[in-house]
Length: 269
Image (tube, rainbow, N blue to C red; front, top):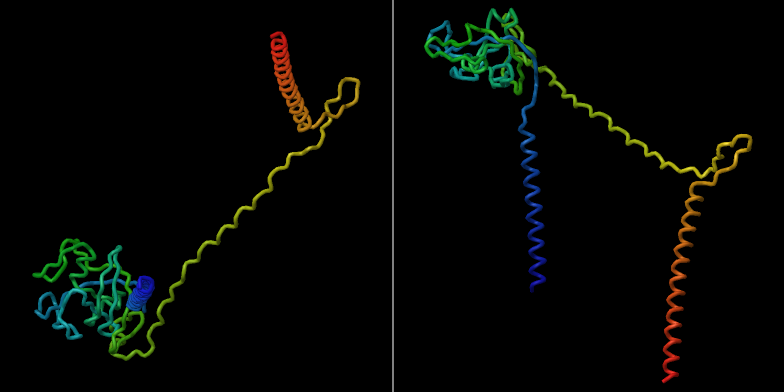
């Protein structure tokens, strides 16, 4: 019973582990599918406005998309309504969607995006003034250079490519040939350095070097260093062996003498 129970427990554990791994992989795949897709990237000069339909500050009524004025609602001279993306200014990134048309004449001067006043204030570090519908604390600054990224095109009319001035009328034409999404070039990894080749260990030469020639005589070959060392070691070993042998003989002799004296004593008794 215990053996079957153990096998069953192992099987259940393996099944549970497989299920957890499968769920984790599915979740990771789902997350990757929800990543923003870059459809267009560029830069332009952006202005700001706040059109709440009150007639203040020169507004013209409700935005063209029918959505109420709000933070993140921007006006474009040519992109389709409800196009989505984000802008980047000095490291700050904020989302927007196209909910209105504009700016008008400024788009002829390269001002291709009209941000809402609240987004403009957050990007520049200013404050939105609900009374004047303008941005305070920026020294009267009304234009900034931004980078933009489009992540989703709207389904209506409008140009699905780099923005063009409002006067071109591109905002009223259906675009069936959107811009090709930019390709992301992977960074090349530096080539791995080849491992340094190991040098073979130095071999000590056993060549017999000639001794210096004495005055008026011929050079005599000097014995190799290992030969001299071996001779010295042999002499030392012989000396030690002689000492040990002498000691052993002395001990043996002493024992013989002692034994002889004992025998003589026994005979005398």
